[in-house]
Amino acid sequence: GENVEQHPSTLSVQEGDSAVIKCTYSDSASNYFPWYKQELGKGPQLIIDIRSNVGEKKDQRIAVTLNKTAKHFSLHITETQPEDSAVYFCAAPSSNTGKLIFGQGTTLQVKP
Amino acid sequence: DSGVTQTPKHLITATGQRVTLRCSPRSGDLSVYWYQQSLDQGLQFLIQYYNGEERAKGNILERFSAQQFPDLHSELNLSSLELGDSALYFCASSLNAIAHEQFFGPGTRLTVL
Image 1: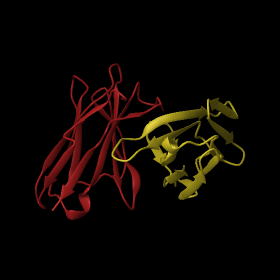
Image 2: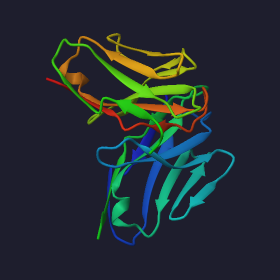
Image 3: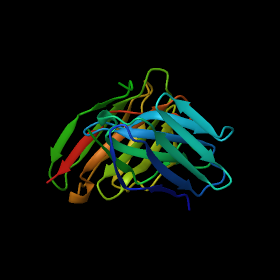
């Protein structure tokens, strides 16, 4: 069935370092891959997404890369700051519906 | 602020009771999604409505039901509540039925005692 695997489940970095979170998906028809950031007590916030016709997308300190052949995509955060500390979720759509299948989440801690 | 609103923010109730959660989508969005977030299950899709009609269904329990009204707001009804229904319930909205950009509301925290 449809599945999205996310790793690692927790990640601790020093302020200024880079952080990378990886996801793999099972549905080869998936063509849209969003990343959400969830802070404590808040709803998930869409921070970046990528469609299958591009391999990389960048927005300031965050970037997403996509490898459709291998069916995996990654979130890269450079020059991390304490306010980047949150839970990050990747997701992929179910075929022909708007339903998103979410990864299990990564708790990122950025130490000052 | 995503533009999606949810009420109430918190809900505490007893087992066996019934509650209604409400969601208003972003202006212009026709599709509404409901997700459940519990500690051990992550974000699980429950149901999607598009322009008043049910569009997709996830692992939603028979005790749960939803609808989308003509003004596009949606309600999620949870009945015969059990302790295990305690979770965060999120609503998200998107422009159309398969627009993948979904914007989430702040959620309703349900506690069943």
